[in-house]
Image 1 (cartoon, helix red, strand yellow):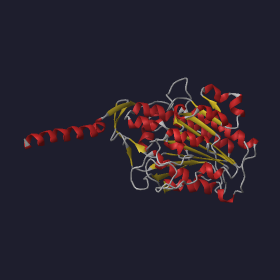
Image 2 (cartoon, helix red, strand yellow):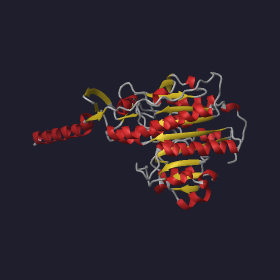
Image 3 (cartoon, one colour):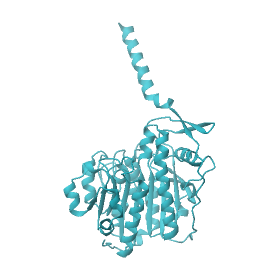
Length: 387
């Protein structure tokens, strides 16, 4: 009887081992692209120049190998993506308060609030104290703020910039906190989490991507764009990260100029690079990254033209343990190491006035303070920018 029990225990152990390691065996072959590099105009900025505006673009789950594979899949090993053309580069540590592994909530809290916290926590300390976020700090400094995500707008990364809660999964409560926050523009998914009647009391609610170009959108004092029930399914009838971010920049820059604001803050997340990496789906990851990189290119053009905006691009963590192994004819062989996050550092890319300080190895919490230092927020007088 004892031997039988041991035998079944061994069978269960082997089955468990196989189940948790099945992702390690997944191999994909991705075609090598042939697109030529589109060289972007890169302006020079004096080291003493200070930005008025901040654009923070996040590639959720985007490690250096996600970038490398996307580069190869677009135009080959010598191709240069938009992100490759950003002139300043550093690395960021990603660990959370008590774990070398971070989730998106703890990592986004590091940028939004400048603290390490527990995984799943949003802009609260490990013992539950709410910490002001960048949009909250700047709301009394003459700034307007906006958020864009291809996930629900209540998902971990965008939520860290306005919510203070002990679980990222309490999305209905997070949605309620968004409506009470100083965020003036929110574009993403998440329709199912909102009290629509309450949302419409103080926001122009839009659910059709065509409304991003309408007069009502441009004239609205506060906008909530919800384009899907949860995350935004990629289709011709749904807006991309590029389309939402371009609309957000037009709206924020117009409002900031019209109302003599000190500036604007915009966070835009390519959320589903992470989702594809969790699924160990390299082909879909490349599609999601393309939208993300096109968003970066558009934002770089905005910086070049505007000359008063600092653009930062980084990631909350790497997802999937992606490895690029070898070339076979006109394809590359890739393999995934896990279906979860990894703890390796991620890139930090910068362009615009103040970009030169975002180099070397930094902690993700440093980015919060470097943003506030770049705009000299401590010297800004109290001002509510009437939208």
